Amino acid sequence: MTTIIIATDGSLCAERAVQVGADIAKSRNAGVVVISAIDDRPIPDSLRAIAETEHLVERASEAHEPHLSNVPTWMMEGVHAAAQAEEQLQLRHVIADLAIERARTILKEAGVENFKEQIGEGDATEIILRAAKREDADMIVMGTRGIGAFKSLVYGSTSQEVAKEAACTCVTVT
Image 1 (cartoon, rainbow, N blue to C red):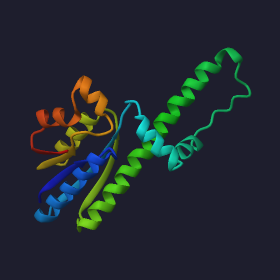
Image 2 (cartoon, helix red, strand yellow; image 1 turned 180 degrees about the vertical axis):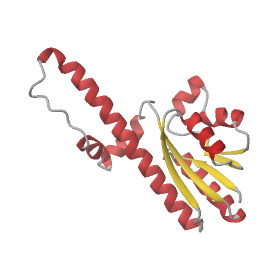
Image 3 (cartoon, rainbow, N blue to C red; image 1 turned 60 degrees about the horizontal axis):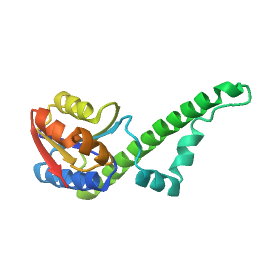
Image 4 (cartoon, rainbow, N blue to C red; image 1 turned 90 degrees about the vertical axis):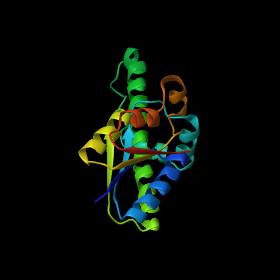
C-alpha cells in the first residue's frame, strides 16, 4: 500500500497541502500519516492574535499557573520568564492539536479513511524525515510557507530541507 506523509503546522498553506495530500491519497487508495511538529520557534503575532480571539491562550494558560505567594521578589523575573515559556509551549501544543484536528476533518471530507495522526516535539524537518523513514513513505506532502515563514527567510525552509534529504517523492504546496 502507498503511504503518504502530510505535514501541517496549522497555517493556510499547510491546510492547502493537506487538501492536496487528501486528494492524492483518495485517488491512490493510500494510507496517510498526518504530522505536526512542536518546536521552539517564536509564535507569530498573527497566530497569537487568532489564539487570543479563540480563547486558546486562556486554554493554554489554565494548564499551568505558577503559585507566586512564596517566591522571593528577586526571583520574580525568572519565575515570570519560566511561566511565559510554559505558556508558549502549551500554546504550541494547542496549535498542533488544532492543526491535526483540521487535517482530520479535511481527510474525512475527502473520503480518506486510512490515516494516522502524530505530533512530535523538536525540529520539524527531523520529525518529518524520521516519520517518512519509519512509515516507509512513498510521498511527503507539505506547504512551502507555514508559521515559520520568517525563520525560512533567514535559515531556509523546512520544505526545502525535507525535499533535499527525503528518500521519497516530495510535493510542496504554495
